[in-house]
Amino acid sequence: MPVNWWQLGLTALVGLLTVAGAYIGSRLGAKANDRATKQRELAARREEWWRRFTWAAELAMDQSKAKRTAGLSLMLKLARSELAQQDEYQLLDVFHQRVLDEILDPTDETGQGQ
Image (tube, rainbow, N blue to C red; front, side, top):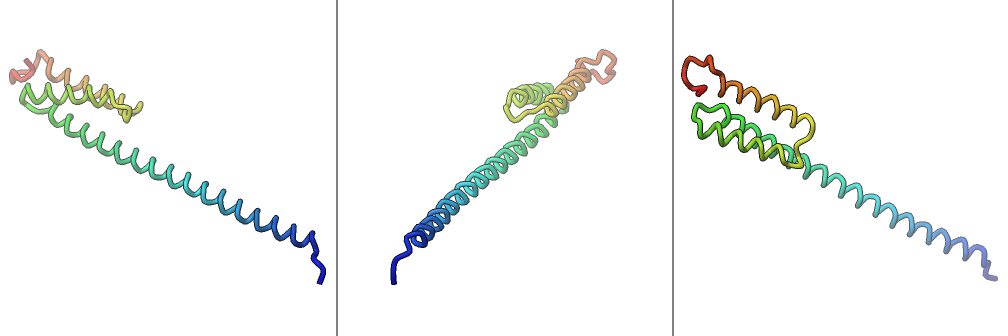
């Protein structure tokens, strides 16, 4: 039986395209997996940022002057984090101002504002 070179060439081309497709598919899958991993890591870091914010907020609202100072200092540190975005900056600003207003309120009859 004679060899049909065009059939042999076509078979080789199909095999090459199959291998190339498999390689490209695996690379795309790996990139998608890497992107998903980065998104999960960022979400976990932002959750930790929020946990620290709530801790700092509790300290900032404490009756103890030392704890309030520590809470406000922690909030300043959190504001410098690359995890803080526009919404967090607004929240920090409002919370900070409210705590400071409470601390500096001259009409506070309990004497805690001094």
